[in-house]
Length: 359
Image (tube, rainbow, N blue to C red; front, side, top):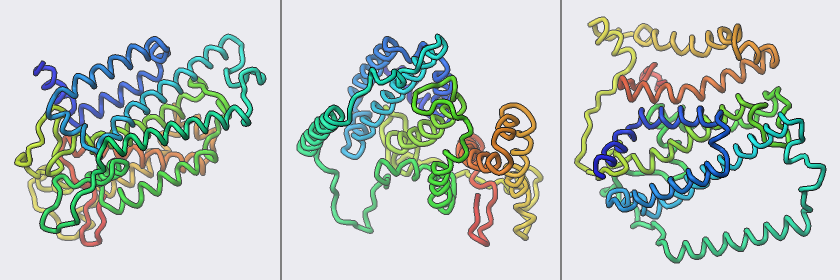
């Protein structure tokens, strides 16, 4: 089965894997047949069988069996399970609504339970089971406590805790002020702004997909593709020297990849026009500055003139629409920058080291 492992290693190249996950998710949420119990049983069995087979590979086992990486396996299973559960309930309710029935959550009190004693007892049992699980986990799996910090011996690769690996992956494509301050802040602000930006009153209190296609698709793209996938990248695919490795590839510390990343100004002046870079930073970076200004200043009014953007503008008004578009464009900027790095080795669109300002 070596050919299969080599194929999977090839498919796990960052640009290919990211495209496959994004395309598969955006298509799958629109196919109700993929979210039935039978499909989930077959898909879950195939996933677990494939995961168990992968563990027979020594290189995969070395990565997945690390104490720091064990939570990732659980995270992948839980994300897939709860994604299926939510989508199954959503499509089930859509069938009910199409047939003129109430959603499953609005059954007139027939399927409801009381907080006391039903919910309290259920939560107490979950508390006991989780406590037992954590105790057994702590006994069987040694904590990844290493020696005291030694400046002469740095880990390779040096990684953040698994729940910060998505943020660490963002630092590869953006400056720390963007990836570590601005974008996390926009994520928090965006989550707080959702109730004030969302004009669609359908789907409140019950699962549905047909009535909230755009909202659910956008959320899944932001959470699953732009966060969970980045955590998987940082955990399973980022090896020594922060190079990409396939899941069945040995993490060779001697693997070196040439640093050929260039800025947009270098692509335009040096490679495109065959001249040197202008000395003055404004002339040097004016093309990147114009692209960024057009991205945030020209795209929103253009999108508001036709298609879904026109509907959003009419329903949301000027302020809410532009706030939404700014948050959306910031979110889309991450995959754009990732593809530019992977395909054309672009480092910065705007690089002004004179003012420590890079985009």
